[in-house]
Image 1: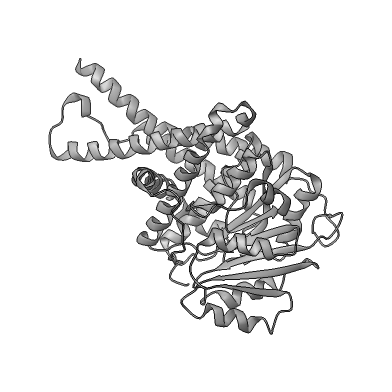
Image 2: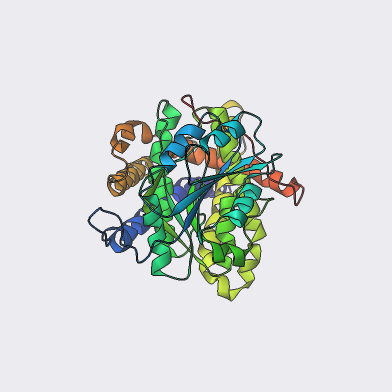
Length: 420
């Protein structure tokens, strides 16, 4: 009977170690297929920009909350956009610092800038909805208030809308710009080896889980059809991605549309950010759980199944770690005897992670020439990423279930690194 118990424990441990392994190979294969099919060849003009059939008006929406430390450099970068027909709409969402004063001062410098002020903090989704309603463009480019948009980002995103009338949103390629700490350097590898590969592979296999909130372009008509952003979801970018796709709009990924962002460089800041991401992801998935009964939504089923398996994995991983640690201190019955030493599974997982990071570095080499400088530090991303993902998911699920429905998701100023 004890042997049977050990077999059960081994199955649990195998699931915890082999699930990340399986997902790594799925992401790598899907990302390579994306590169060969979509990314390798693109029609460009002499300037290196994509060939566009027309130059429609594009409105860049920049929701801001306490962004005084970053306002000047963000709008300086927006002034360098290599596109002739755009406007920028800055939405000051009740900032308590001098963001409003700085934005008003920029009006004298930039003719393409409009500034909207909301009297109190109402959340990013409300700020985006306000900006979208007052924007003049048919296409809405959305970035965060601390993001530096690459000069050629608009043309690379816009080409997708011109190539297909069913495209509702296109997400760009966020890159980490604060790399002064170990956590910052680890996240460089994470955004390439996890975020970049996931978006490429999901585009290959069907649907995207999310159009990144830090850099994405939307078709106004698609937003109107889907109902714009939801004010009660903590991650409005996940929610709008699912909204659009369940309304049968296509969401795509464009790796050439770069946006340089700041990320947390403290454990506390990283935990708060990832907990919010986890809660928002669970909120969105529970909101769209009805799609399992709709045959027309079958293309959304794979990412829904993948997400639920990841939640099960998170609880299994945390349970295994806790039981293993307790077993080091006090004797446990055979049923609960789980070894934390991964053995050959751990070696295989580490080797796969290096392969995954190497593949991502090859694919992203044209977009981030400093990526290899963080390679040594980035090899630690599996430990950090999977541990943080597991623990935040375990904490997030009961919080979401107990959270008051309809409660507005308002801004909380994030940790943006030592250099922010």
